[in-house]
Image (cartoon, rainbow, N blue to C red; front, side, top):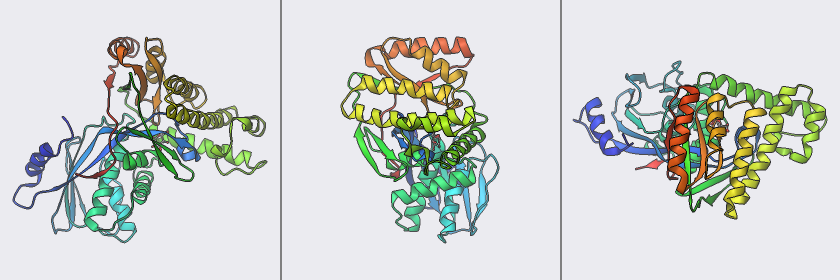
Amino acid sequence: MKADPDLLMEEFFKTYGDRAADPVFFYSPGRVNLIGEHTDYNGGYVFPCALDFGTVMALRQTGGTRIRLNSLNFPGEVDVPLASSYTPIPGSWTNYPVGVINEFALKGIAAPGLELLFFGDIPNGAGLSSSASIEMVTAVAMNEITGEGFGMMELVKMSQRAENIFAGMNCGIMDQFAVGFGRKDHAISLNCDTLEYSYAPLILGDHRLIITNTNKRRGLTESKYNERRAECGKAVELISLHHPVRNLSQLTVDDLWMVEKYIDSPVIRKRARHVITENGRTLEAITALEKNDIETFGRLMNESHDSLCTDYEVTGIELDTLVYEGRRLPGVIGTRMTGAGFGGCTVSIVESLHTEEFVNRLGETYSARTGLKADFYMPGIGEGARRI
Ligand code: GLA
């Protein structure tokens, strides 16, 4: 089912009744990151784009004292009384919207009584930012109905905090940023240290972007992610005993000797090496795309995956099978994991002529190796979060 407002209107009336006013609708996309992985919380560059699938939310103000939340993606209603601050419900999808409503509450901006219905066509837990999409659609909606007029950057930061606090995922800013600032047919180059950004047209000519979902359930993502983040913090601490650095992205490949010299632990050393080399690759890839040099872009995508596999150790058999088997197929320019890792999706650039073969042959090999079925998407690049 497509995230379509007409369908959601019907479902909304089935859920909440149709005697009162019609709901209003908001939309927010998912995202895919092309390169620059695990660099955002290290003050580095990322290069994501918003997808043309996402989350639609229908909202009606009730004049009451409760927020009722339903989703067509998850069973059961959650009903929360209005409060001056909110607490997470362990494991509930409603932590994403309620976390954002809580951010407004912490600024002294109370939500009115609400009936909310969500529907998303982003596969959940696939590393395509279904959670950031729910956060941002809520943030844009709350901003509008409360008349606060926050800029998109503030809504992005509030959504990131909601994820940190309500979902316990110590994520960087990339996902909420890409989902908020997405632009049709463009990727966004974002410096996560200064938050300066620019748009780059994503012109792939005779190539297609293919996203492949491992369909592996991701169990330990939050804890492993937070562990990587802590390891990077440790690396900065050790290097800064000898050389002043605020974050790993202040170092370049020419500084890698410091990593070797000042960090004893081989594991922390590898983590730092990934971040520093990945940041360099990302800048190089952005320049390559500006010059329409897809071959170089693809090579850097491949190198990014190799580094995420051996140095950052966030891949696993499912992602590695898709990437390393994918690379053997004709017309594959570059392929890598995207998002946090440990499962989720890969992103590949494939010559248009060979996309069918890619999907068929990789799908077969993947099933034979892992016993799982991969899903393939050929998304368009869409706009960011907004009222519709
Ligand atoms: C997740 C996080 C992002 C980013 C990526 C890895 O998607 O939410 O902030 O750190 O992982 O690049």
